[in-house]
Length: 516
Image (spheres, rainbow, N blue to C red):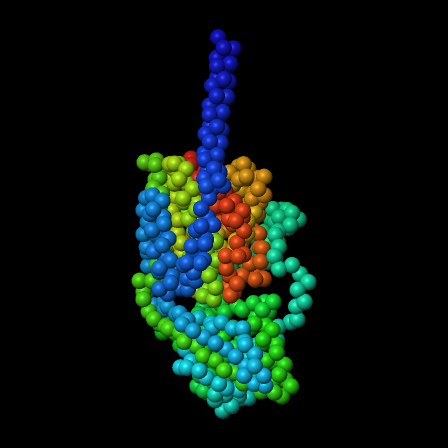
C-alpha cells in the first residue's frame, strides 16, 4: 500500500509538473507566433516616424500622434485607454521655413537646423560673422564684445576635432562586454555598458538638470541686448550630422533666445578657419517659426489590459517608453522605436488571447526630453510627491515597470538597477529565449530615461540593455533620426521577448521583490 501510494504520488507530481510546463510552453508559443510571424511593429514605427513624427513636446504634432496611439490601442481591444495631462505651461514650437547661407567671400549652403523654442528672424537678415570660442566666463565675454555685436551672427564653441572615420559608426555589444557586465558587482560608476551611469538619486539629478537647462540663459540675454542677430553652434558628429537637441526654454515664462542654429561640424570648421585668417564671412539667414501654448497637447497616453484574477487585477505590471522626440527628424530611434515596441507588446498579449491575472498597463510618456516631465507628473499624482516621505497605497500595487529608450538595437538583457533579488526570477523567465542572446542580467544602473522615476519610488523599475548600433554616433537627437536606421529583426525580438516577460510577471504568485 505504501509503495502504491508513493508510485501514485510520483505519477501525480510528474503529470502536474508536465502540465504546468506545457502551459508555459503553450503561452510562449502563442506569444512567439504573434510576435514573430504576425508582427506589426514595423508598421507601427513607420506610422510613428513617417506620418506622426517628429513629436516635440507641447506641439500639435505631438497631440495628433497621441490621438493616433490612443485610437490604435482601442482598435486592438485594449480595455481602457486614456490621456493624463502632465504640464500646463509647456509651449509648442514649430518651424515653418528656414535657410542659412554664407554669401561672402564665396557662396556656401550651410547645413543647419534651428534649435527649438527660439525666436524667429522677422524676415531675411544678413550680417558679418564673429567667433566666440567660449562663453563660460561671461564677464570676460562682456569685456571683449560689449558694443561690438550689433547686426552680427555669432559662431560659438570650439572647433570639432578632426575625425577620419576609421572607427565603425554602428556596433553591437561584444560577447566580452556582455560577460563583463554580467559579472559586475557594483551598480555604478564605471559601468561596462553605460560608463556615464551614477548613483545620484532623482531629486539630486533633477536639481542638477535645472541648473543645466539655464546654463546659457545669461549669455543669450547679453547677445540679445547687444543686438546680435543669430547664433550658430555644432557638435563633433561626422560626417555632416546636425544635432539641434538641447534647448530648454519650453516654459511660458522662459526667455526665448534669438534665432539659434545647429550646423554641421564641417561647415563650422570652414567658417572658423576663415575668421582666423582675418576674413569675415557674411551670413544670410531667415527663420520662420511659431510659438504657442496649448496645455491640452501635453498628455501621457495610458492603456490597460485589465487583469482576469478578481484578487490580483488591482495589481499592475507596467511597460513604458517616452513618446516625445526632438524636432529635426522623425524621432524614430529616440524614441519612436521604444514606443512602437511597447505598443506591440500590448497588441501581442491581446491578440494571443491571453488573460493575464494582473493588469498590464502601458504608459507612453510626454516631456521626457525636458527632464522626465510626463513620468514625474504621473508618479507624483499616483504615488506621492517626490520631495515628501508620504506615499499613496497605489504604489504598493505596482509589481514592475519596464522601459525601452536606447535606440532601435536588439535587446541583450536587463539592467537590474541594484535589485539582486529579481535576478533568479528574470533568469528563469528569459531562459526560453537564450538562443536570441537577450538574457544578460547585470546589477549595474543605467540612467537618463523614465525608469529612474520608478526606481526612485522603490518600484522595481528596469531599462532594457540594447545594442548600441549607431544611436550615439548618428541618430540620437540629430537630423538623421529616421526609419532607415531601424532593423526589423531587432524590433520583432524586442517586442516579443518583452511581451513574454511581462506576461510571466503578471502570472507570478506575488509581486516582484523590491530593492532594499
